[in-house]
Length: 227
Image (cartoon, rainbow, N blue to C red; front, side, top):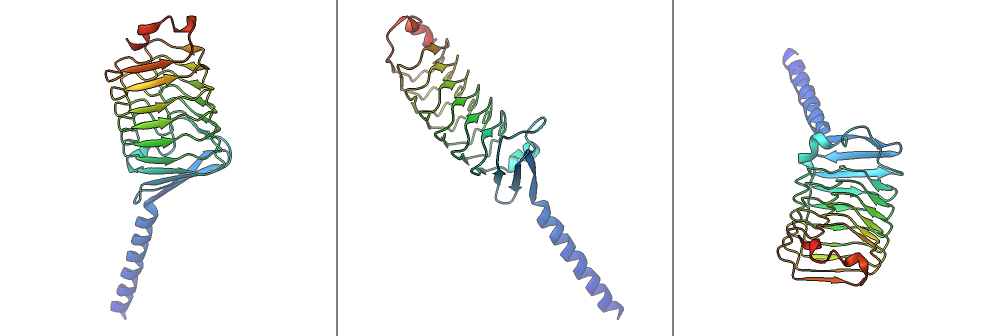
């Protein structure tokens, strides 16, 4: 009888331990009034679902477990990516951004050294300062027609970046936007741009061609854009 009792007790304890361990691999919480997040530390997938803006106090609620994050799926209904939301998520290699997102905040992906590609959806109107700063594995980026402003240092330090498409509609490009993009060889700046910061192409050592469609006093900076 006692032996059977202890066997049953042991089986129950093992089952509880397995359950606790399994549950410990899933982290979740809220990241906005109507947004929830869930991170599976086994698969490395961070899922963000709900409606409205990311809104939380301090760093992103998943920040302490950022080393687990390999990919992120942001569901339709989320309307922004908050500043520094994925900062220093160096294991992040891919992210799905829905068409409902209209803004990407300051430093949202700064230091995501493993990120190789990003599709910015139509509907995003602004790319914040240092949004992709230091994303050294990022090789190409297409900015949608809806974007009107690109913030300071948005792509600075993206040493693997070889191709950038800036559409008509962008009116301002901040200082040092492409600073240190040493693999960038050519770029075309559309005529819609009326404001451009200094040192936009600072240390772009591979750059051989810059086409500026707007030919007026705004481009008197000339070579200073490259220094």
